[in-house]
Amino acid sequence: MSGPDVPAQLADELRDLLGPGGWLDPADAPGLTVDWRGAYSGTPILIARPGTVAEVQAVVRASARAGVAVVTQGGHTSLSGGSVPTSDRPSVLLSTSRLDSVLSVDPARFTITAEAGCTIEQVQQAAAGVDRQLGMDWGARGTATVGGAVSTNAGGLNVLRYGSTRENILGLSAVLADGRVFDGLRALRKDNTGYDLKHLFIGGEGSLGVVTAVVLKLYPRQDHHRSMFAAISDLGQVNDLYGLACAIDHGGLTAFELVPEMGLAAAVVEIGVARPITTVSDWYLLARFSGSVPMDDKVTRFLGEAVEAGLLLDAVVADTAAQEENLWRMRDELPPETLIDCKGAKFDAAVPIDRIVDLQFGAEAIAGEICGPDAVVFSFGHLGDGNLHVYVLPSLERGGRLAPELVAATTAAVDDLIWSLGGTISAEHGVGQDLLVRLAGQKSEVELDLMRRLKKALDPDDMFNPGRGAHCVVAAPARP
Ligand SMILES: Cc1cc2nc3c(=O)[nH]c(=O)nc-3n(C[C@H](O)[C@H](O)[C@H](O)COP(=O)(O)OP(=O)(O)OC[C@H]3O[C@@H](n4cnc5c(N)ncnc54)[C@H](O)[C@@H]3O)c2cc1C
Image (cartoon, rainbow, N blue to C red; front, side, top):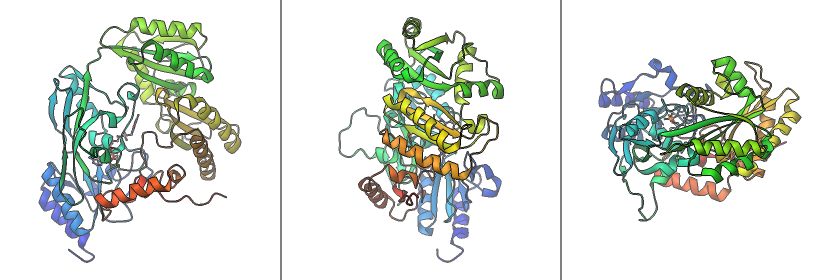
């Protein structure tokens, strides 16, 4: 194929190849061409919905012949603009929505093999059906897919106990840029046979191939959970609180999350969650111990010792399924973009766990200095992983927007703070299109060079997800 009609010819070819149900006209699926936050959009020549690996290969080969980009899309819940079609180059949007079968569940091996388009919730349910459980979990579980989780190395609520997605993947298969299949769909816990190539695709953000199926670890089902919600006395002592919980049962601690009063108050008003505790504090701990035996003793000991040590003011334990559901619903709904429709400078920050407090207090100082006295630093998230989702907002007023120049100045200052604390500005959401300039401050030229060489080796024509991911990081313009 050559000439200006190439994209149209490719679209015709793919329609024939995939047949009815195997493709969508972009005009009929506007939600798939704009990202979850409405920040990025692009129009593909076609939305391809292959239902088999052979069809994925055919789409990739035809696109390669036509010189058209392929952007892979799973559940489309990316928070970094990774899953929208390119707007500067013709692209096919390859949706994995029809690769949605659980291929096998193996309780004896403690593994599950799922096609890339299975949702996290679907895999969780399949695991529960054989008395096992998946390690991964987060708010978008009903929509986010296994392939998307692999490609972003997603984190979430259970990283403390089960690790990020990377730690949960035993094997995977992927279609490469030349149409061949990398078949690494093994269920081995140990395999020291050279470079472990699956890791290139984990966190690869779709830039090296289309992940088609994954072997995930399963764990013994933990039927005993105790979630607790506690008012923190002083955020400055949160490391002692974490140390105490770990000393009581490090392996049983499955969540250790920070909740701000500003988030709880908004969740009560906006989505009607019940306030779990009458004592009001600036910060709360939402934690959970899980195990195969009752956890009551551990929870009682932790809360008792923490209150006695002056680390907690007050605490409640979820006693009923409804109370448990209320706590975790509130946690899932905390992001202020949706909770109060408020936007500002946003950070998916991870720092060494003992520097969390320096991150929060440092960000508050920056916000006050740059954005003025009404500005707030709305932070929540995975305290036990050293990962906070930090939002510098103009105020808590619904619909508030921080002026673009303040967003830029705050972003630069908080990024510097994060790096000075030995941290990263992408703990779990990936690079996507969001961090292409900002990440230059974190990655060395050697690291970036190695990434570019890997990309060149696996995708020499830059077909997969062009312009996204860490290998595309560009030097930041000099700061004034
Ligand atoms: C409400 C909400 C809560 C969230 N909470 C968390 C959280 O706690 N922790 C966390 O880490 N993330 C969180 N996320 C972000 C998001 O859910 C994860 O990044 C998730 O892994 C994306 O999966 P997806 O299937 O939606 O992928 P998509 O958004 O469709 O794609 C994400 C990236 O992966 C690529 N990709 C997708 N599938 C494939 C494939 N089969 N092969 C190759 N590349 C592929 C895409 O090209 C894109 O670059 C949250 C998102 C929302 C909306």
